[in-house]
Structure formats: C-alpha cells, structure tokens
Image 1 (cartoon, rainbow, N blue to C red):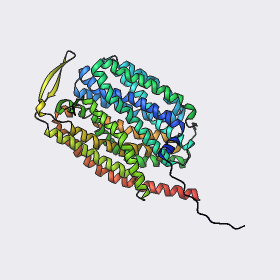
Image 2 (image 1 turned 180 degrees about the horizontal axis):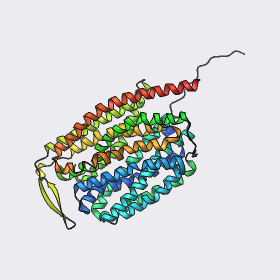
Image 3 (image 1 turned 90 degrees about the vertical axis):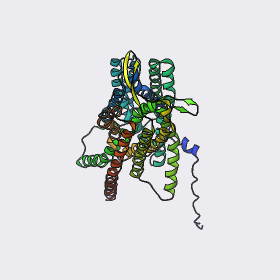
Image 4 (image 1 turned 60 degrees about the horizontal axis):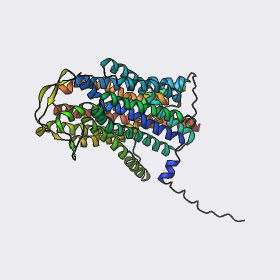
Length: 469
C-alpha cells in the first residue's frame, strides 16, 4: 500500500455570520446588558451638567466641577470593585449586588434638589464604579474558558463590547434631552432607572453561560509578587499619560456643551438640536469607526504590518490635540460676546450672550467630534483589551480597574481644578491652551511607550525561556 502526500486543503475563512455565531452564549447577555446599562449612565450624564448649572441654578463652573468630581468617584471606585471581585465576591455576584444602589441613585436623582442630587450621585458612583471593571473582565474570562486560544474572536468581542457601550450612549444622547425638554428633568431621570433595571435582569439571566469563577485567596510566591509588581510598573506609565486624553474627552460633556449653547448656531440641516444632543455624534461614530478600524488592522496584519497597541494610542493622542485645535479655531471665529444675567428658578445666573449673527456654524464641533471619536477608538478600545491581556490571572479585574482609574485621575486632578477656568477665559484661548498641552503629552507618551514595548519584549522572552527550561 503506497502512501500519497496530498496537500491539505486550506481551511475556509469563516463568514461574518459564522463568526458571530461562534461567540459563546454568555457574550450576548453581557452585550445587551452592557448596552442597557450604558444607555442609563450616559442618559443621565447627557443632561447632568445643565441640570446642575441651570435647574439647580449653581452656574456653569459648578456644573463642570460636580460632573468632574462625580466622574472621578465613578472611576476611582473600580479599584475597590476589582479588589472585592478578585479576592472575595467574584465578578458575577459583585455586579448583581451593586446594581441595587445603581438603580436607587437614578430614582433619587429625580428629586431635583441639591441634597437629593448629592446622595444620588454618590449611589450612582458606587454602583457604576464598582461594577465597571468586572463586566469586561468576566467577558474575557468567558472567552478564555469557552473559546480558549481564539485571540482574534476575543478581540472582536472587546470591539463589539465597546460598540454596545456606544449604541447605548447614542440612544440616550439623542432621546433624553428631548424628554427633558418635553416633560422636565424629573421624568427624564426616571428613564435611566428603568434602563438600569432592564440591564440587571438581562445580566443576571446569563449566569449559566458565563465563565466559572474560582476565587483563590492564597499568599503569592516571591516570583508571583515580582511578576505582579513588574506588570504594574510596566503599564502604569502608559496609563498615567492616558489621563490627559480623558481630561480632554470629558470636556465634551461640559465646556463643549456650554460653548455650543452660547456660541454656536445649532441648526443642523433644518433641525434645531440642543447642545447636549451634539454628544450623540460620538457614540454613533464609534459604532461606525470600530468595525472600520478593525478591518484596517486585519488587512494590515495579513500584510505582515502589525500595528502595536502603543502606536494606536499615540495616534489617538495626536488626534485629540487636533480636536482641541478645531475647537480653539471655532472659539476665535465666534463673534464678541457680552455677559448677561439670566433668571432661572428664581435665581440670577451670569451667562455669556452672543448675537445670532455672530454664532459659528455647528460643523466646527461636528469636525472636532469626528477627530475625538477616532482618538477614543484608538485609545480606549485598545487600552481596555491591553489591560486584560497584560494582567496576571489573579489581577485581571484590578488591572482593568487601573485602566478605568485614568478617567478618575483626569477628572479629579485636571478637570476639577480648572473648572473655573473656562468661564473666566474667552473660548478661543481656552481651547488653544488645552490643545497646546496635548503637544507635550504626545512627546512624553512617545518615550514612555518605547520603554513599555522594550520591557514587554524582555518579559515575553523571560517567560519563553522559563517555559522551555
């Protein structure tokens, strides 16, 4: 009997639908639960700054300060969430438990007083912050168990997960301001409470399909401790610089809204939109840009041109500076303004006033949002997966929490201290100052990224040598 060496048939490339069906069932519970949860969070965020500034009559500087401090708390608490999940409760149980204060916070915010607002924001920060690092980590672990070794499918899942976040945000940014304008803040704040309850039910129902969690509370060996510290040191430099991106990005919820309100003609193809509804552009474009950029990376990868995570993030920082440059140009082009007292809720609030003829076109901010959105995809999607990949097995949630902490640091140490700067400066010089600062951020990131890539390569070589011995 003679043997023949017949060539093995190439495995056909799966279709897009086949790839979608290959995702584990647990992914879809996470996807839809995350979509509803983010819809609730960003719905509340879309109207929060003007609620504080105008409904509570505390002014634009207070609106910026309160939003910055709230976001800081929301993104510091993931450290607690990561620690509790890794060491005590597990990711699923923690998410279920802390969904309760999350829902209560939305309900209390509808009370429309300063005291209710403070209590509500505390509960919302606790719920959203503690939950935040554990959803994506549970998803990553589900792929490790259900689809081991399929890194490309997991990367696709992280991209789709980010799309879910932004589909939810797009819906809420488009709808909640209109509900606010029609029915008032109280009814508008009730809608996120309902959405969060829906998210809770969807996520809880998926328990049989998630990764099986094992919590091991044992003392680390010296080698394990050394690996953990090496990982934290290696990635902390990157994460620290990313705080400057989030500081600029989160101003789209505050200073960009105030600029649109006071200096822009908000007529878009015959539709008069509210200043907050411009924020819809970001999540809508995220949904478009995530698959487009994923296709670009796949094409480059097949050609042997693998783009490193740090390269994507650096390009994102450059685009962030360009977005602030666009806003600065719009600020300089806007006509001269006067300051006038507006009566809101029986209080007088000092606001800027610009004649309609002196307002700039809305398309300046549209262009800035395009650049900022591409930057977000390059930085945020990349960083979220990078945090999961580089973290040791027992620190997945904690390192993801470190990534989320960058948003908290940005708001606490950058945006909160400068909250009073925008009301006291003309918008052109203010945004130019922000854009100029990003030049130094890009330069610093270049050197930190070089060091990170070098240490990562050395770490991989050491692990390969240890495995071979």
